[in-house]
Image (cartoon, rainbow, N blue to C red; front, side):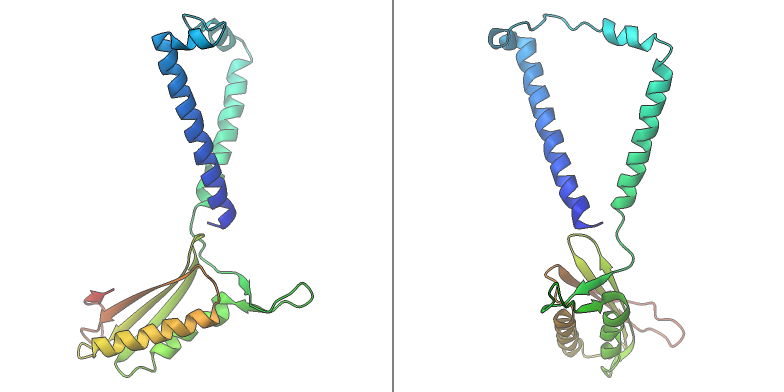
Length: 196
């Protein structure tokens, strides 16, 4: 989900909210008779005959079917636009200009660096990282498998330094990190306790 979709979400939600508030207030004023005092020509009852006449026409099923199809297409597009991005595009670096653009491949170049650095820590047996653009946040998820005898305070300090280094490589204000530490319980399986 990108920023354009988020902005569109906010605008549409604000409009829908305002419309619902306006309709609710108007309905309340109409039922109490107050609306007729301020607005001329307000009927006492709602006339549904135009809707009934339209529904009896031969073109009605085709128009409603076409509208339903358009709404279904828009709904599918809207759901797909809200899926989190699995891949991360390139990003402009500070110092870029219109004449010269400095870019970094966030998926190919930046993502392998944190797990490689984490594997240099003595107690770490395995490390992987993913970088996902979730619209409002750029999330670096680091999964580290360590020995049960690992010094957790020391490990936390080293991982904090590692994430801080990644933040200098990826100068994006949206960058957030999520680190999961998994205790190694056996040589064959890395499944065990998780500390987040």
